[in-house]
Structure formats: structure tokens, C-alpha cells
Image (cartoon, rainbow, N blue to C red; front, side):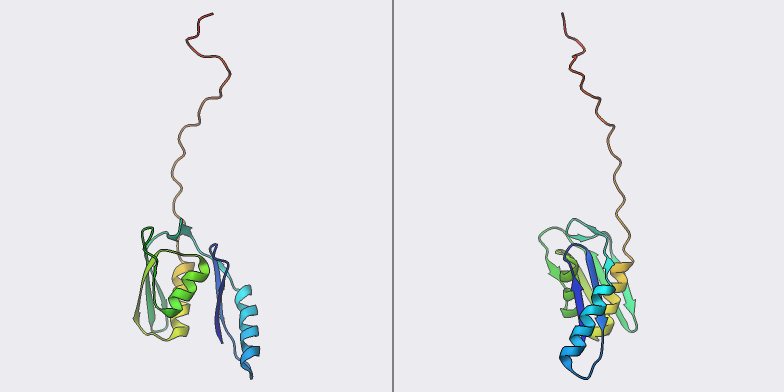
Length: 137
């Protein structure tokens, strides 16, 4: 069973587990996926920059999108992005479309995202003391 879990707030994980019964495999996979969650660097509702994720023969291109675009992605990539809370993204699966490798490539790309640099803060305002500079008494 291949499962993807996330909190829709920037954390996502995946796992692939086997068992003799389907229900047991899903249970094992969910437990392992929750233990292997990673933090995804995001800017508002999209990713910070364009990146390619690679695993085996699968290459997944992840590109930030403007507000209102939505998740333009195939099945496995959509599952990962929705679980992470990414609401605007453009993706393209290249070469392989094997779901296991596509999920691994997507996670590889998301884990390598760099944080967006913080803009410099404007000079702090002077404290208000209750005295105006040009007041006449």
C-alpha cells in the first residue's frame, strides 16, 4: 500500500508497506508515513521556487503559480500537493509515470525547496511620548 499523509499546513509524508492483507498494509503504511513527515517551504499558497524532483526514471517539475491557478497535477503529485496544503502549483511528470517513483520524486523536490528570503524590515518607528515637536505652550 502506498499512502500519502499531510496536515495541509506544510507537512507531508509518504510510505510504501506490504502485508498479507490489504487493511493491515494500509494501517502499517499510515503509521510509517506519519513518522516520516517533512516540512515543505511554502510562500502563501504555493512553493517558493521552481525545482525538479528525481527518483529512478521519474522526473517531476514543480513550478510556483499565482493565486487562483489551482493544483495542475496528475494523480500522485496532486495527492502529495493537496496533503501538504499547496493550493497553487504547476507540475509536469516527465519520463516515467510509475506512481511510486512519481511520489518519491515529488517528495524529493519538495524536500529540497529553499526558504524564501525575508525582506528587510523598515526602520522601527520612534516611540510615541505624547509630546509633539512643534507644539506651543
